[in-house]
Length: 150
Image (tube, rainbow, N blue to C red; front, top):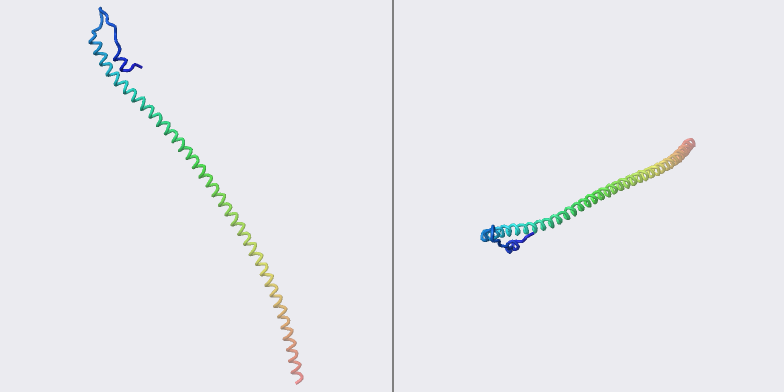
């Protein structure tokens, strides 16, 4: 690409016949140099701006990728936490069921033991009652015998 300096320093050979007016060519080249210099500066600035925008775009794409990866990790972590919590809840329920069954079994055993104790006490009471009846009958017999003797 030509630079404004290239245009300004451009020299044309002069011809004797049918040549251009040197003043008009120089004036046109001066105008062209000014316009081209503006366009060249604008083009350079725009190229720099495009370069900066491309850098920014790469930065934002990297940021977007990082955010997407973070989101995926967060979703995965949330799913893992949910699964662990579900497993813990299931384990707590299983433990509670086992403890409840054990408590029911223990209470059942204790009830059986108490029933046996009650039966033993009833038998002891029946034996005691029979002994008392026997004692009372023998005492009554004794009193009757005493009354007969008198």
